[in-house]
Amino acid sequence: MVSEISQGIGKSYSEYPYQQVTDKEINKLHFKWFMRNGLPQTLNDGVYLYNTDSKGNGGKHWQCFCLKYPNIYFVDPFGSELNGLPSEELREFGKRNGYKMIYANEYDIQALLSWLCGYYSLYFATKMRKYFNQLNPKTFDTIIHKGYTRYPSDTNVKIITEWSKKVGIL
Image 1 (cartoon, rainbow, N blue to C red):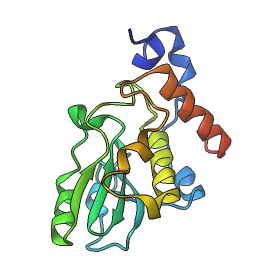
Image 2 (cartoon, rainbow, N blue to C red):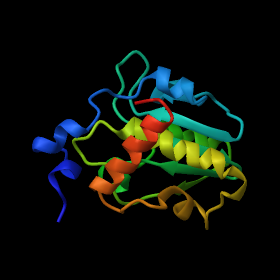
Image 3 (cartoon, one colour):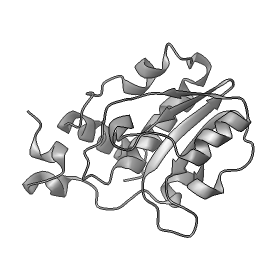
Image 4 (cartoon, rainbow, N blue to C red):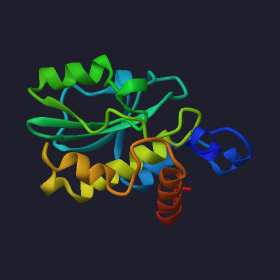
């Protein structure tokens, strides 16, 4: 049974952070980030954050990806069932530059009504950067999801909020 907090409803909803991640938090952790229509033609191997909204808008949903040729390792806290396909722009970027898309999760980790996508994406991006040299299609899922449940849960919320506080972004 999924609790009220992991669904983002009920009295426990106040335990979620109300603010979305901003460029200030992303920059504090030294990540480059792009809006959907601001993706450059090419990028160096590395870890990046990505917002599914267009430039000039307030932002919709944060995802992260790691370029390690010949792969793009893609993570969406909502999973592929809800939102998790990379945008057409990111898929075209990969195709144009000879990358193969590798997905971390086909299941949602973040509750649908939660605002934590940016925090999850920063956490996953930090893990991908830390384990960049070990990252490959066989290790990707293990590196990304160690300690998480494969569905929205109190455990996931606790992990992400404690980590965010520890690194000073929440």
